[in-house]
Image 1 (cartoon, rainbow, N blue to C red):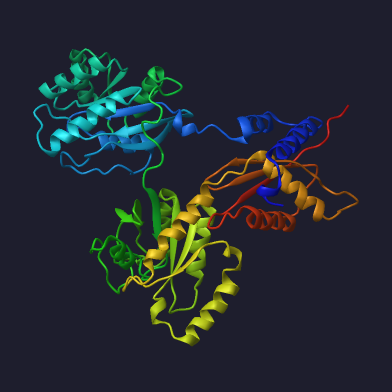
Image 2: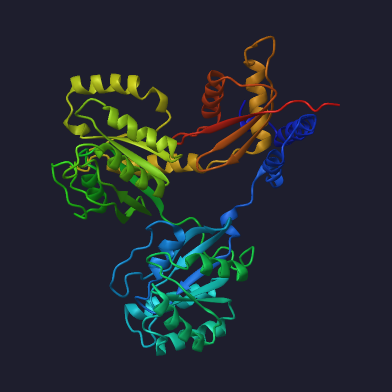
Amino acid sequence: MTDETTPPGDDEAVERALRVGLEDFELSDEDRALLGEEGAGGERVDEASVRPVVAVVGRPNVGKSTLVNRILGRREAVVEDVPGVTRDRVAYDAEWSGRPFTLVDTGGWEVDASGIHLRVAEQAEVAVELADAVLFVVDATVGATDTDEAVVKLLRRSGKPVVLVANKVDDLRGEAEAAMLWSLGLGQPWPVSALHGRGSGDVLDALLDVLPERTSVAGAYPRGGPRRVALVGRPNVGKSSLLNKLAREDRVVVDNVAGTTRDPVDELIELGGKMWRFVDTAGIRRRVHQTRGADFYASLRTQAAIEKAEVAVVLIDAEHAIAEQDLRVISQVIESGRALVIAYNKWDTLDEERRYYLEREIERELVQVQWAPRVNISALTGRHVDRLVPALEVSLDSWDQRIPTGRLNAFFGEVVAAHPHPVRGGKQPRILFATQASTQPPRFVLFASGFIEAQYRRFLERRLREEFGFEGTPIEMSVRVREKRRR
């Protein structure tokens, strides 16, 4: 049965009836929280849209991006020992002590800025206006400069709460230098070494004390920005060649020697009228004096790129048989819960015999990921690389997809009525209620009166895909077995 044939009111009636029936079963506080998170029509409030916003500001080269990386717990913001590397406002999702917030890195502030530096300063001013609180970073080893004094005036005018960060304090002598920053009149200067992490926890505690629960600048940093794509695959399958072809220039070193790419490279590339952020990753390379562990380090690199991305394009060399390494990379993408596209590179070089055998390999080796969009391309010539965009969009749409709770329960009701769970030990488990706990990837929670076998779960997932699509995204399905209340 499809959405067109089921009146929405009927779905909602089914949901209400099943919710009432759930009250006969023992539910934990976690269960009730999950069931109570939905708003009208089974939709959840988007948490990112209400998170408070924190702007990190200061003059050039005081360590703002280093502090951002320290707070995030990963190397996300670009850091170089050159003033002015960060030019735009860049927003990141951060968390401290269980409190999520949006962290905004800004370019350095100069009073007499001109040209691009003026635009950087303007961006920093905008960041303060579009923030709920400000981390003002000062270099404690230099002390307060005229530029710092000018920034203080602007911060006072903004009326936003400010936490003063005295950065580059590595020892007790540095703490004495930090104390001199009381002169700025912004209250206590918090001594920190963003590079080494010293004192960063105290700063974040102070930040939480002034940070509101919900933002007053909702919509300032929509999460719609460029979608993040990881190009992954075993060495020498053409990841860098593909990135260069997409970018229409040589951005990445390409060589037939496996392992030319040393570090992940992020590239903003326009495709299909939209901007995309591509991450090119190094394949496996044998390290000097290292006879073991190369696979481990390669896996680690690939994992880092996948974790940073929303969708992964797994490149497979169509000239050669599908290898265990190919399957391992695909498994990494699925286990990380990212959307997936499989691209068969060097397709234009295949003769009819190789194409026949490749199709058989795909049927045999990739039977569990038939839901992933497939694109046959040539990174070298650019043949059919334009087909990547529709495949990426399909996978990401599925990754973001949410099924209304009423529709979901009506669907499971129809499926179970037509194909009940097998009777085991004289008992037949019932699905009491179903809800989609989250998206990216779609996660479903089934409340059941008994254990649901793995084979039946796979059957339910297959039917979910047949009914609602979910092409290009893994699906996670968990079952919570609940017993009837004792009267």
